[in-house]
Length: 453
Image 1 (cartoon, one colour):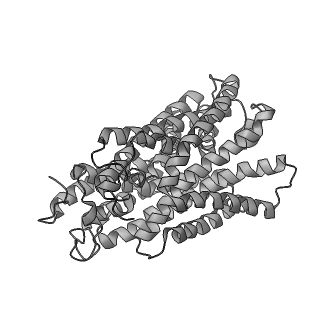
Image 2: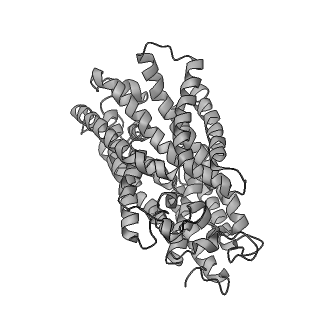
Image 3: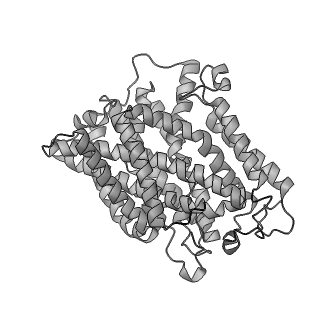
């Protein structure tokens, strides 16, 4: 969590591409792409939804530029938004709890691929074997998370190259079988179509929106690093594989039943290639979850719990493994993925928008050493440790979003609109507007890092 002084900064923004690319060539993206077809969209509609939803990586890229500016992780930068004490609550919910949920979903996806690999080796994937597999994958992931930034920067370029080679073979096989004119037996029309299109965009955008901590991986870059380069390489690293892998999932669903993704893909992939494909799915998901575990560990420390990062990452892993075993052994995996991803957007959309708005208001000027000051003398103590502007904007954005959601429950506005889920756009507009207005009115005098007018 410490501030990185200028003489310890290093690296080039182009390295961010492989970090984000390796993390986004994963099984969950294939599953989500196939889910769009299962929701009733044509292949053309699904591909448009995939591109639109992945455009939210631009927002992830925007947040990452605050890393070199501050020299601290996102979990510290957001003290400027919520106050010293308010930020502890923010990190507990947005930083830690949401990260653990995503860790669990991705771990479940990797474990599902690993179960098939175990059976190919002649073993029965009994409950006991499944538990062991989950624990082994979690242990590898958490090891990367504990060693952190340096190991991630070294590993992720070769991982990206390996995954690119494997998915090139997948792409050739899938595209050979794709029905590019695919349409469901009963095409969606009118309000029903719009409802599914918006739900699809929400589902796809949940991936980039989950990275409210993208500054964590850019903070070691020199302060003078090009802002456009940091934003661009981060956004491209998520956008390109996000579009490609999700699109492969949608294309595959036009030819086979993706309700059981592995069984469906096995029908169109060469038999000899199946083990390599499963290994690639596991590797990609480990790469993704290592980023999540790293940031979740920082979030737990930022809550105010004074423990080493190794122990904080272990705590994250324990919680995530428990949720994973529930998703795999008790719940329905596809339903769990769809519901959780859509529901988390209620919180993540406003949280990311407020962060982006703060960057805009401050012209990305952050004083890292001052952000490290947690005493009542800090300019970020605000009122009793809480920045009212940030707290009210987040509460207002989440409340407005919750009224519009339609997933595990249907909000009153969504019900009035025949199920149309506007949680994402409404949450973004309300939270961003509230924060911009309240920040200007409540700006403390004499604070160099107060939002600029």
